Structures are given as C-alpha cells and as structure tokens.
Image 1 (cartoon, rainbow, N blue to C red):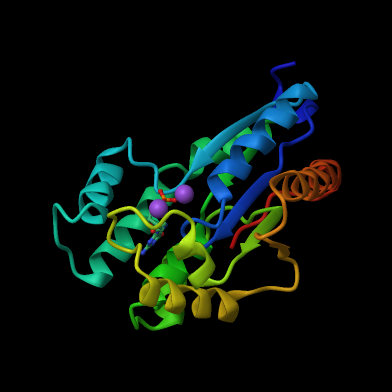
Image 2 (spheres, rainbow, N blue to C red):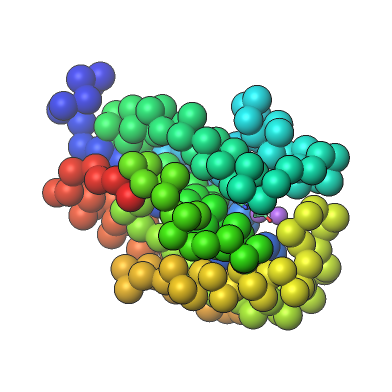
Length: 210
Ligand code: DGP
Ligand code: NA
Ligand code: NA
C-alpha cells in the first residue's frame, strides 16, 4: 500500500518540558512500544542538529558561537520549516512521528529571554499542528537536581524558571500534563495510552496547521 490516499495517516505526537524532565527517555520508550505493536513510527527531535541550520544551532547551544536572540529564534523555527514537507509526507503515508520538542519549546525558550511572545509565535504559524502534546511537568529545582545540567547554554536554573513560566502562558487545555516525578513505568504507561488514543482518533481529522 503505497498510495497515501488509501493509508490511514500517522499521528504527530509531541513531548515538551524543561531540560531534564525525562522527555527524551520517554520518547524512546514510546517509540519502542509502538514499534512492538507493529505500528509504523519514527523518533524525531528538534532541534535537528544534522542539517546546516541545525549545525548553526548546535554551535550556538554549545557556546561556540554567539547570535542575537531574534536571529537564533528564527533559525530554530527555520529548522522546523526545513523538515515540514518531509513531516507531512511521513504522516500522510501512515507513519506516526514521536517528536522530542517542537514549536512550544521554540516559543518558550525565546520568550524566556524577554522576547515578545506573539513575535515568537509568528514564524511557527503554518507548521503542522500536533495531534497530541504531552507536557512532562517538573519543577525547575527538581530538574536541576537530577544529576545536574550539562554545559549547554540554556541549562541554568534561573533561565529554566523563566521557561517554565512561558510554558504556563502557552499551556492549552488540549495538552496532556503528566507529573514527571512519577515512576518511569507509570509515565510510560500514561503516554502510551494517550498515544494509542491519538493514533486512533486522528484518522478522522485532517492534518491542520498551527
Ligand atoms: P535538546 O536537544 O532537546 O536538549 O534541546 C537543546 C536545547 O535547546 C534545550 O535547552 C531546549 C532548547 N530549544 C529547543 N528548541 C528550541 C527552540 O525552538 N528555540 C529555542 N530558543 N530553544 C530551543
Ligand atoms: Na538539553
Ligand atoms: Na532532551
């Protein structure tokens, strides 16, 4: 079946949260469990550091380059835009995408620097809207205590407090919030249930945009 009109579409599933909330681990677990059920699924993440734009972002995050806040904001957004058509093709071909960070990180991490939140949202408009957003909720202090942060630019307690505040402003009733302090298995099971539900129900919904 390679005619996409005869294939039920995949779901766009996004995990969001502060650095060290456990999102990356849970994305991996979710992809494995969906694969185990024989469902077509791929693990994606943003920023995608493997493109030219992604390498510029990576260099900024590791403090090897400096960029104006607005400039890096637009690069993060461009990194999502350069993957948009591939994303659409995958979804239309029935592949569910589990995405570690998306536009909500884009807006929250930049607005946390004091940029106008509406200005931050603007370049995200037109990207594919997720079918499911899972927010792994953790206090910034708790996240910081999880073996400490790495050395990347944003991994600082005070900054993460601002990011948490911006996520709260963006928070939408459709988001599924999960307490990141729960045991890993419990978080995994909750996300799995939400994902299966989303994969089922998205069949009836056309793709839409932010
Ligand atoms: P990660 O690879 O998930 O650890 O993300 C790298 C860092 O970049 C992390 O601190 C979150 C931040 N980040 C992710 N996406 C965006 C974005 O679109 N804009 C900004 N400003 N920061 C982002
Ligand atoms: Na990180
Ligand atoms: Na991560």
